[in-house]
Length: 91
Figure 1 (tube, rainbow, N blue to C red):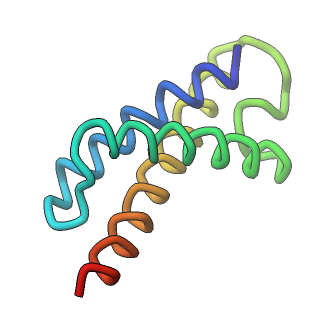
Figure 2: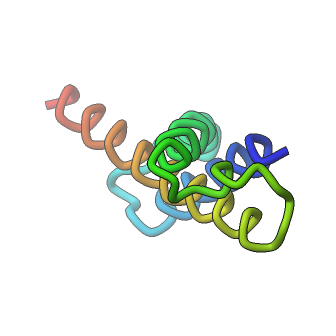
């Protein structure tokens, strides 16, 4: 369940980052896909460090908030990185 929350919040985080950084945006579908990938990676990395929501394995409010935060941040970061790579390759 925590993985699903991270993936959904990653898609949302990717779209929020794309909305805030118009020159890095990949479009709605691209932002969502890169956000989902980043949400999964961000959730997995932070849970390995003991910082993400998946570390506890429970479904308490702290775990859910941790999954949302790690997924959203991971999604936003991956979307920005992919946007920067795409922009650099276009030059």
